[in-house]
Length: 340
Ligand code: NAD
Ligand code: UDP
Image (tube, rainbow, N blue to C red; front, side, top):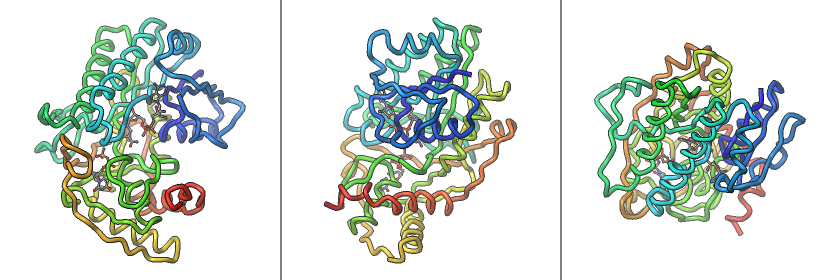
């Protein structure tokens, strides 16, 4: 099968490509504006094209030549939703709509990466079910929700096309994937910017403070990136993965950000032999991300639909973070810039 990956140079894309090269079963083409995270990822069945999804004609031509389109293009960090909400809608909705239109035009299967954030604020459900949970957005004045709303509308349009019978699709809702090449490291005391793993690890490398946003009581379930890649394959290869929506997450890794900070400190100490001693500072969400930030307490995903495809998670919370920390500890050059 020919698989075209838009956003191939990002965190999920680079790991997915590594997984697909290893499988050796498909012909992969990746497009991205950057290939930094693809350094060293090579295979006879993989071709990279450096380009912008907005370039006239390019994406359309690539879609025409493939069997399956995987759409990973989006601004995915909370700091960007807060600072540049209009950019988020432009890329995450309007540019993604063009990809959907190319798939409709050429009648190609679309695997769309959405987000667990479509569920929005915590509901009374004990877990997020792919099909039955309400999607509860916050106020317009809290621009975090422009990300979730863009993704939600895209999902609804994709679903409507599936209903109409003119689109073959699968939608993936990721729950906090973590692993090699995740985001980027930042200098001591930085605010906003990357997602939580990169912030906490940067603090350990630099000796800077660990910020617990709004007290650190918020829950997240983290997923090993390799488990996320095998989930992709289960959805791709299985007939039951078609025209459906899947939570991709690990319900057994539920933790608060405060507990995560302590867990990462312990693991970092065990891995490096030098126990980190960061000051832990509680900070208001708007002071950390900017005005209009709002957080949510995310409940665990229900993954019954995914396990029915034969998938199961293999890595628990400690293994997920130990392996991700080890990756960076083994590559001191990645931390060199923030330490200079
Ligand atoms: P990422 O930022 O690492 O990857 C996105 C990639 O898209 C980047 O490499 C970027 O260069 C590329 N891109 C952006 N604009 C482009 C353009 N105009 N033309 C070509 N390439 C462009 O993000 P990620 O973590 O890999 O996430 C991928 C998808 O999964 C996104 O849709 C995101 O919303 C979704 N998601 C991820 C997570 C997670 O845990 N990582 C959680 C929820 C949702
Ligand atoms: N967070 C934190 N300290 C940081 C960065 C993030 O306490 O240095 C919190 C953030 O407020 C949120 C959680 O960690 O509650 C997860 O944030 P992340 O940016 O990783 O992704 P999200 O799940 O919110 O999309």
